[in-house]
Image 1 (cartoon, one colour):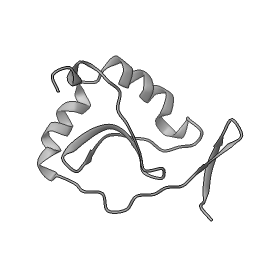
Image 2: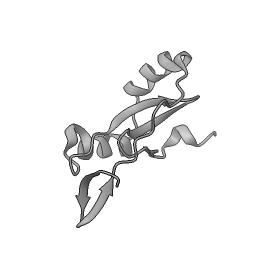
Image 3: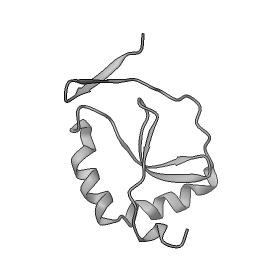
Length: 91
């Protein structure tokens, strides 16, 4: 049986941990730059979820997964969240 990590509106949220995600170390310098330049949507979202304040779920900000830098990642859920902004316009 899967472990319940929290409940949201009385709905159980189950652990869905993903091990050994791919990591491209060549993106480290780009990651540092992206952490300095955030969209308004990312700032607002981060203020709501940081420090486990959103249903005690731990969010990582700006995480390298494979050849991508994702806006937010929840390791225990295997969940990626992308907040669209102007950086996505040309892609």
